[in-house]
Image 1 (cartoon, rainbow, N blue to C red):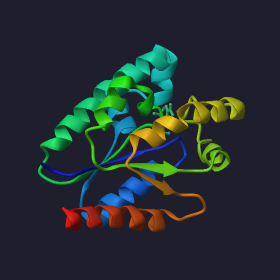
Image 2: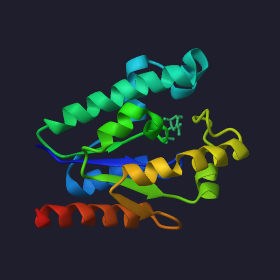
Image 3: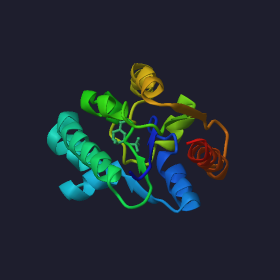
Image 4: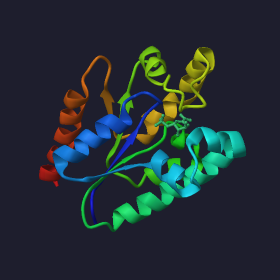
Length: 175
Ligand code: S3P
């Protein structure tokens, strides 16, 4: 069975940048589930939210995440899979993550996460107050779904990626 590293965390926690870097360090493939949903639908996340609402987006996200995790289990090489920030609110996804030994939570400061989410591509990051509430609703999901929490506050992508690659190398030698 090929190893998979699953990155979870709130919007703006750096999952994509860190995931790409860890994948490069380990020589693994990188997959961003948001990008897969956009590709399947032929629309941006904002367009999917506008046309189908959050419910429609979650439906597509659940299908994409579950099938990517299934495929990763039988892939030839390792994969780093970055999940959208709300994927952990989908009960089937949360349940499925229990079978994954390498789920890493990128623990970011909410203020910093909000600042980093102002790229106009995140429909749930338009209002600071709602953003904070969403984080409060989800924090426990991130913590319970992950085997590892990495504090990313004030750290560079390279530093965070090195720590995560280290966790994986350690696990491999410990097997
Ligand atoms: C969302 C996070 C986004 C994207 C969508 C909804 C969320 O992904 O899936 O805008 O509910 O937190 P990122 O965490 O990569 O920004």
